[in-house]
Length: 238
Image (cartoon, rainbow, N blue to C red; front, top):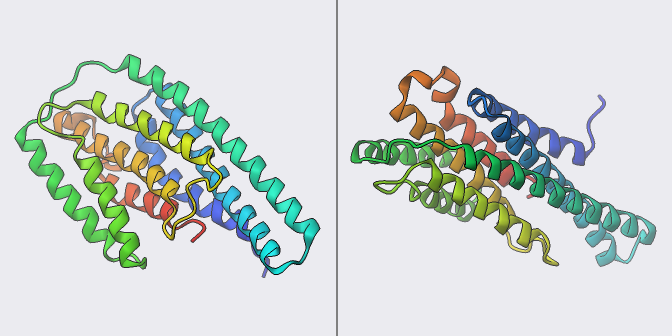
């Protein structure tokens, strides 16, 4: 039976996860938000390919074989990383435009805080069922906590998208370093990418709480969708 290459399979898995969450972004009917999401999608795909190519080059170098293949893989990885950075720049531009158009919304109250805590627990319980190392689950759990902290009493959507913008800046800076944020057992760049996605998911929970009439079934299924997206991002290239 014919099979995809490891590069194509890794990207396909990531695309499937992102596609599951895209309808929620699309429902907002904001072209800038949708373009931001699609550009971010492209960046993550490029970074996944970067790490696969660089890893191939590192293996050749470590074994002292296939010098031409090593050079080709290293070059392909560098090119994909540049592509990913270009996508991030585009994503940042559209995010800035979306933030400018944000209208005043209800500030977070105690009722929403209680619901958010329930959501956070549900996400962690789902994460506990995923076949990843305990240390990896702990890392993603810390991101869930960080994102939940965005919704302190009095916060609004502005806080979420300021955070997302900072994470894009962090990811750009990280991917420009020699190690690209991929040196550790759990690649830090993937945690940053997951933070962006989890922030979007939490924002949808916020929208649904204060404007129930805007929530489709797809939006109410956000927990499973965003968790799947985060896990795909988290698991790529491990």
